[in-house]
Structures are given as C-alpha cells and as structure tokens.
Image 1 (tube, rainbow, N blue to C red):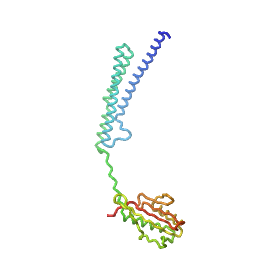
Image 2 (image 1 turned 135 degrees about the horizontal axis):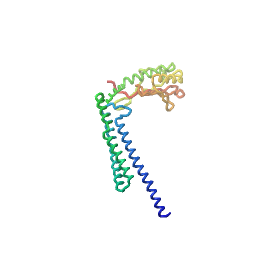
Image 3 (image 1 turned 180 degrees about the vertical axis):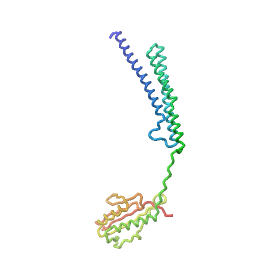
Image 4 (image 1 turned 135 degrees about the vertical axis):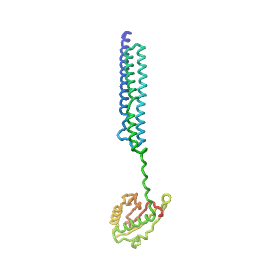
Length: 275
C-alpha cells in the first residue's frame, strides 16, 4: 500500500471515529436531558402506597429532593464537557464540533433550569403539609400481647389425672393394674423434675392389663386424638403430644407378648407453683 493510500485510509478512519464521537456526545446529551425530565415529572410520586406518617412524608420529600439534586449535578458536569467541546472546536476551526458543543450546551442548560425550577417537590410538600395534620408523627407501636398465664403444678396434676381417667375409660374392660387390682386414678404417683428456672415437670407411669390389649391400644390412641393431641411415632412407641395443653406428652406401648401389659407414660408441660 502506498503512502497516499495509507493517508486516505487514516483520514477515513478519522472521519468515522469523529462521527461516532459526535453521535455519542449528542446521544448522551439527549439521554441525560430525557432522564432529568423524567426525574422532574416523577418527583412527587410516592409509589403505590401513600405515606401514612409524618416521618414517611419527610422521607418521601428527601428522596425527591435528592433525586433532583443528583440530576442537576449530572447535567452540570455534562454542561462543562460540552462547553469545552464547543471551545475546542472553535479554536481548532472545526465548525461541526463547535456547533455540536453549542447545541448540546444549550440543551443541558435548559434541562438544568427546568430541574431547578421544578414545582413537583413543592407539590409534594403541600400534600405532606395537608396530610400531616391528620396522621401520627410516627407509626403507632402495637401494644404488646398479654403474657400467657403460666401453668401451675396443681393444674398440670389435675389434667394428667384427667387424661389417665380418659385412658382407662377408653380401654376394653375389665382394666386392672399389673398386680390385678383395679386402677385408682387419684392414687396415681406423680414424680416431679425441675425445668426452666423455677418450674417443675410432672410425670407418671402406669401398667394396665385389659380384656383386649390390641383393641384397647387403638381406642386409647383415638381418645387422645379426640382430646386434641397430635400423633407422633418413634422407636415403635405410640406417642401423642401438644405444645399448648397442660399435658405435653403421652405415650403407650403394647408389651402383651412380654408381660401382658400396656405401658403408659404421661408428662406435663413445665409448670410453676400456684400462688
């Protein structure tokens, strides 16, 4: 390639780069101006939900003001750049660049003025002023829910004996203890173990013989279900439990093939001494 051809190629590339740069400058200016216009139009938009408190209104005004200030700052920086382009084009006697710089500077200056005199923030402030008189300064703090009453040891004992009575009534008669005597609910022995900081957890165990242990097991579990206890099963042992009732856990195991008995265990939730 001859020297003349190389010069022509370089001039062509220079013109292409110049056109691309001019398009970038003009396009960037238009995008900035359009963005500033949208910021100004949407400055008083509070979103889908109207502010409900004075603090919410203040935050909305602060967001709108910050957005306008950011838009004005970006436009000012761009204005400085386009002014430099216009001056450089004039000194270099590049009419096209001087014209581009002047036109873009005029657009940016107009956009800055529009953002500066925008009335949307004033509209938002007026809306806030009219609304604040009818709303609380801050969102009301919900009143705390009353603390649930603590389970007492007496209540836990009463409920455990009631569940023992329900269990015996559900079993297939006749029902006896391991020594063949009829079960006496009020004579059941309850053991207490510490729980929490000052509480106690009651527990009782019983062994029952019935006319049909398999049928009794199914009937007892159904009675526990009807009393509001939830089923669980672990280690071949039928369990019912509750997180809200005084009795926390009931379990029963059929050991008919071992000793001919149903083994029952009842455990209360953590309880405190009654006042």
